[in-house]
Amino acid sequence: MRILITNDDGINAPGLITLQAIAEEIAGPKGEVWTVAPAFEQSGVGHCISYTHPMMVAQLGPRRFAAEGSPADCVLAGLYDVMNGTPPDLVLSGVNRGNNAAENVLYSGTIGAAMEAALQGLPAIALSQFLGPDNRDLADPFEAAARFGAQVVRRLLDAAPWDEEDYRLFYNVNFPPAPASAVKGTRATTQGYRRNTRFTVDPHLSPSGRRFLWIKGGAQHEPTLPGSDAHANLEGLISVTPMRADLTAHDRLAHLQDALG
Image 1: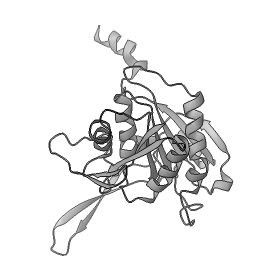
Image 2: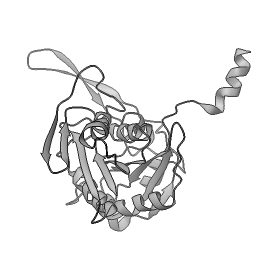
Image 3: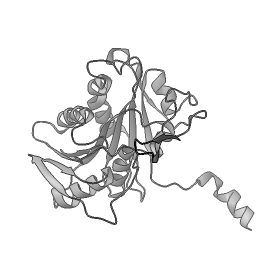
């Protein structure tokens, strides 16, 4: 199997080392793992593409490339330049430092890369490691992802639905904020919603007196509804959420048509 891996934390992020090991286990001794990751951190860029300016791609080693662009850019660079003519069988994105559950999905460059791969007609999985007081100070905060990542990916490849719809399925996997020994299992979940937290801004003055705003995230351990991703993670479970890029509110179409007459 040929696998393309990327992330949004950057080419030197420790989570990418974890993902490399997961991908190598899935690819097998005769497979290939190709890396195209952002040269610098691109957290929070979502599905952004560098449509108005070019990006530089540099080879750092065998099958290892850094791109001065977003995670979605990295997927495009991998498909149409680095691996041109021999596309991968699978795209893996992550392992993100921090969760991409609930509303974080909508901001995540990790998700954006998987979404772009799906739009390109390829199987794709995003993987993220929820952090909290039980695992952030471990020698390896990615311990749960490292222990169970290949197992989850293999289960998805072997048994989960994969369609070829126009907006094809991709999967969002979040490992709980716990050491590997405390992981309780895996659950299929919906995307949750943290009702009591929001992104905000935090103003600061520079030494020169100029005013700047820092984007500030909300509390990540706010509960979501049972059956959703963040709820499962906080219960010690690995969440797996099937996703599509189609943002249509299908459950409201009939009502809207009635309103429009």
